[in-house]
Image (cartoon, rainbow, N blue to C red):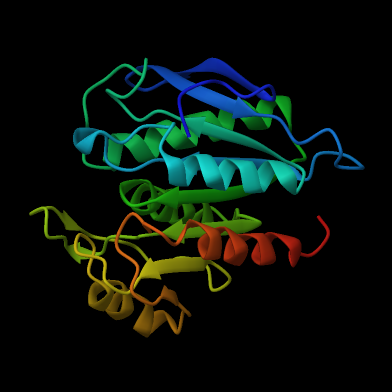
Length: 225
């Protein structure tokens, strides 16, 4: 998909610890009946590798949440889009997403919260989820795609925390960047299922349809909020 804003999308800014956080806000589809189900924060891949909020996988995630009645918010990490600040290996980015969540909760105090992310964005969301869980604030939904854990082939090392037992984790079998063996080693002590797409690479090339079908079924099966 290109960078053209779709009709239900608007661009906004949040105040963050390192300055402005640039974000896209995707409103729920008009044909969804009833109130908004909640707020979904969707995080993108590594900004130093060209990742931003317009990447195909976070965009697909946002569209799925929209379809199921969620207000989807796609922040740009530090240095991506119009967001200020320098890349901070996931530490400052965690604080940034928590700042976005805090701002949204002021406007939507009773809204349920969903966290979703791809690649580096999944790593940051695992940290956000952990911070919320430790504060007694369990997200209603967590979706982590292409999650790095341990040593990635890029040379970066990820200390990925445990997440809630109902998290949906999706990974490509042939991921050359975030090896499947690493995410299985991370999930094993948690007894956390991992959905593996046989033959898929890190960017799920050629697997976008089965990927979206998996997330679609997951969102459709969420208990009423």
